Length: 67
Image (tube, rainbow, N blue to C red; front, side, top):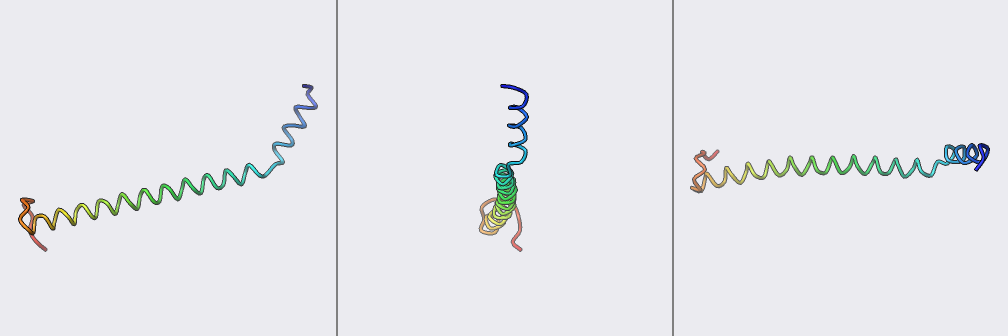
């Protein structure tokens, strides 16, 4: 391979925008995944707290009071 061939290959790679679209989709997918994990984590904590309060109210030994 000559320097001219390498230069041509690099310029072709730089000008190609198809790869950029794939990277954009990957970043968007990652952000959506993080949002979903955060939402489910928050929801899981809220559900756990509600179940603990319910358990205390029906005499499950949680030691809490019914509100």
